[in-house]
Image (cartoon, rainbow, N blue to C red; front, side, top):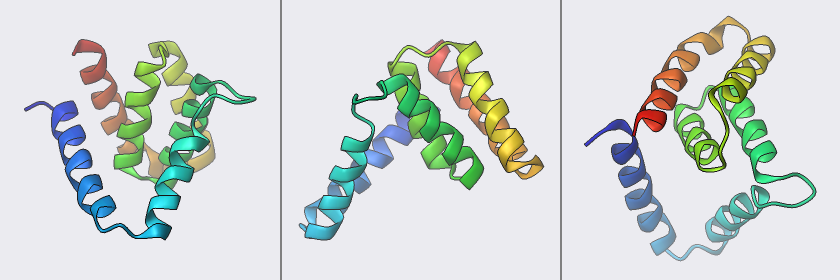
Length: 113
């Protein structure tokens, strides 16, 4: 199993377990998260770029992978992704660099998949 398949399988399995508990607050939060990234006044590409930059600054590798996958689905180009990386690096500072390395690895996996 490659990085993408492993991440997506684990995420789906754990989301099923979490949502299977039928907790109203958790379900509402997951729904809010899903709807936040739907097209609105901002298009999906823009929202995913914002989500990716924020995830990098917050240093959440799972979030970075998720937003990279959604950015790839939305048709972002490598050049656009690297501009997002540069924004996250300027905002977050050098502590973002390890996450940048893993993000580049994951983006390469997405584009070679």
